[in-house]
Length: 338
Image (tube, one colour):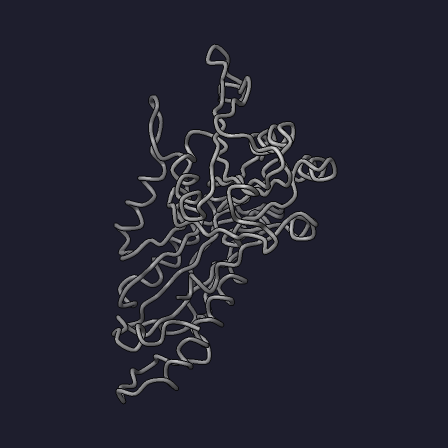
């Protein structure tokens, strides 16, 4: 149940409407269902006699689409009035399962395609909605956020473009935010004798320190020793993972990071922990991309290197992943609705 006392004292900006773009419909429905429930409870709880127009609805979802022409070009269409509403547009740029036709050929939507559709719906709403808010759990081009040589700053450019189009708020689940959702299986014993928090690299240190302090347990850290004289696929290859921290022998360990991309580095950390006689290895990240598929995760699960992989449901996951015995989604719709 939402904090009704807090909500009762707050004044809404305007009636809320939700536009869930292609590939984000399931999350949009979850958010909508919670929002309908929250506001229905609030109206029953309300004692001040104030009833705002459009506050409690059977649904806050709107009918919108980005139909394609035969060339693959598209336009944004909103099929109902959004005049004066507080519009929230949900977009999952990682959902590559959505397809469209280009001159008769089937094409899978890339992050660029999703971002373009987002801009199309913004353009259709500009000047009509009271306020436009973008909810983008996995931030578009967030991995290209800084410049190391003469190269583009894609994330900054994208954010500036959204603001220039009239977007008031951009809500993202920043993977570097220490408040990242964490899911802990109920049979864990949370004390120094049985549990440790592990940072897989230097970049995740602050996050691991935060959770180890919250849970009152020890932490350890791996750091990557790289061969800086060689470049493979645009990266300096990792020579070895070195570990700093107390013994993990006999303890359950939770490895916390921002994302699983291919998962190669994370799986190597899990194997290193098992080689150091850790008990169960739980991998917890904000986003699970699995860009190289699940074959190696399956292999490492069968060998006992990983016990569970937990990621939020804020971005697209394949049916194959959801069927894996080691995978657990951390449901975020309720918190996003709040």
